[in-house]
Image 1 (spheres, protein in one colour):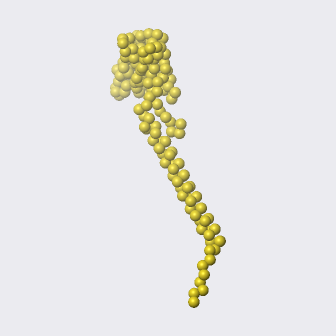
Image 2 (cartoon, helix red, strand yellow):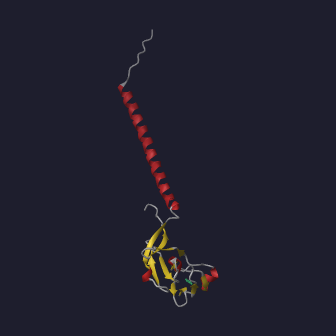
Image 3 (cartoon, protein in one colour):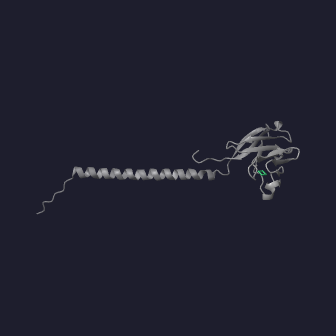
Length: 173
Ligand code: FES
């Protein structure tokens, strides 16, 4: 004769429920933890995807910048750019502008536009660049290092002049 009887023990059911809740909490923690890690990783990758995007930096108007004039502008990232009007450009006024970094590619001194010579000049070691930013004399020419160049856009209806600068999103910004 079998006297074995089964009883639902309320204590063991509570322990099982606690164990289940703990497992769920652990899985939730793992998902949230790894998910946050993956999210940060993908945010880190996003600037690489934005590499080709550019912003427009307003510099002035065509009438404010006659041929031969130049002005310096700073990008939000702190880079300085010289915008020089080296020619009229005719029907495409943007073709008459050159926007070049003021940072000499030799040792980083500041270059400036010399209207009379139609060249950019670096006073540190007498480096010179033509109107397109190509090194023509001094250490930059010996090393074959040219000035970084930026595209210029002129809005036809109002003559507003913009320099196109790369949009660099910083990690976490
Ligand atoms: S830093 Fe410009 S020529 Fe040396």
